[in-house]
Image 1 (tube, one colour):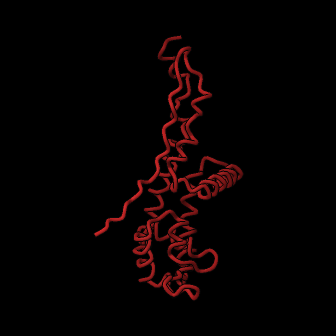
Image 2 (image 1 turned 180 degrees about the vertical axis):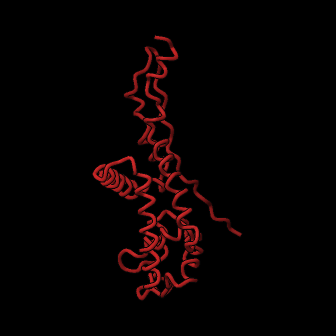
Image 3 (image 1 turned 90 degrees about the horizontal axis):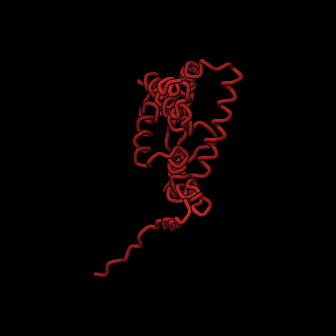
Length: 197
């Protein structure tokens, strides 16, 4: 067996890389979703915001931004886009007059249902190589992973996530005579001193 044949017979490590797999699926979905939602106010972001707002009682913009992992300033502009054609309406929060709740209108619900049907077709196309049972399993597993990742909220402390992902240096096999490197110190935000004028 030649080296070239041996290389062809070995599985490509990239094919087993979760980041690569997620990236390919994500890019395919985003391209199709952007095409489907071209004329929708706010595009895919607008649809996500409407989806977040349509489920459950009205919530304030901060809660929606946190759920979607979206910058609050960006969210404000997206809600403006949705409000202009009457898909959502803002109203003062009775519990906190400084806060604004986002309500989905009847027009917004109808628009959301239409777009949801279109996106279901995109999803079916993307998962077209799977049987209906396999597709349902993929959705269920991705939902569990996504909910778990959202609950852990790794964006709050990336240093901690990286530390947990790295193998324990004390348990890593080392060549004889080699010493363990000290674990990198966890970064903490620099404390700011207040200027006195």
